[in-house]
Length: 466
Ligand code: 5AD
Ligand code: SF4
Image (cartoon, rainbow, N blue to C red; front, side, top):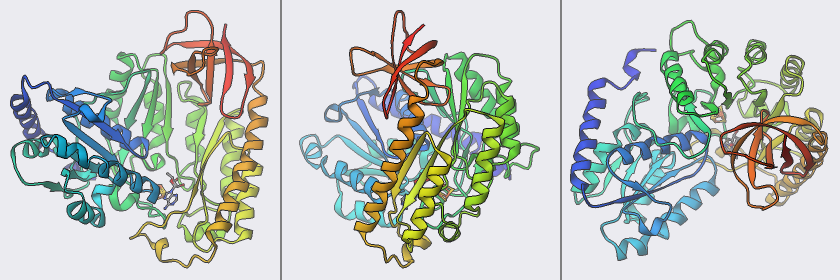
């Protein structure tokens, strides 16, 4: 990769100048900003950067959209449902804009990177004053400055596949933090819009990642999740002698008591070398999210996934052999175009064989511009729904069994929030990322504790602190 993929100091400095200019413009006005994020962790991490910039410019954050002076929706384009919800939310703001014409409504993220949505916003959502795509995120200060000072609407969906280092970040409360290690995707799975809206793979330099990790650990974060669309191809674009397994080993050497997680992995690139690194690194949580999408080789071929059900099984066997007790999760798409009952049965068989701890199951959603959107799709929605429900039922039975096996065990947990019920007032996570509700004396969010599992349910373990 060339250095040109990193936004130059000069261009960044220009944005910091705009941050000062906005701060000057709004000084003493006590303006408030509201953000809402749809979609994946990558989007959440992006929103944290925008909130960091907003904070730097003097905005206070609010949870109440009705009292905000600046409203931002960071959108997701992976499935139609997420798009519909974003449009619904923005539509509902038209009355607010009428009551308070000064409010600035902005939209960014994956939907904003697509021409068809941009046209729709231009035509039918006049309340949106500012729209910018994933590639323009680092230019947010100058875009906001223009939105505050110019009459016309601002649209910026241009930009190259850049990396901007050194932007401020405002993270959420609690002991968990996201750490992006790479952006974009080169895989072009035939159903997926991500490569079109997030551009080509580009990796952050290892020293930048290590620096950010050290800062996070020093700030008291206890669970840091390394983010990328396909972390296993980390470093391929850097031209350095570094890959994801090597990065894990480097980060594991950072002093401190914390867990490292990562997502998402692609089965075509996950390797024994990765599992060796995971097994060797005591800070790397023994947990793996490895989406397989379908158990049918024919469907996998047409999805352009480049592995087979058999090679997936072999990977999992290797991971389990090196890390007994590892927690496994996966993504599955039900109803890909051309999927038959026999294909679905193979997906179900894989689910039964592997016994995942957690599954994210999605009904296929056609995305215009992707190859699969043009494939023939003879299965009826009712048929797909029936498959979907069979899968959920099968998985519930598996989870019930797996959860019950934890009964009576003592486990190390990270307390990460408060729970709704009075009996178990805190939430926590196991190293394997299972959700636990906890009770006991002297529990503080951000603590690692030892706890005994008292009972289990489908969604949660219940534990008492030792
Ligand atoms: N329809 C349904 N699910 C999708 N995913 C990605 N694209 C689509 C689509 N068009 C799912 C995949 C991926 C997860 C993040 O979203 O399972 O792993
Ligand atoms: Fe989409 Fe496939 Fe890339 Fe994941 S690996 S983001 S599913 S194209």
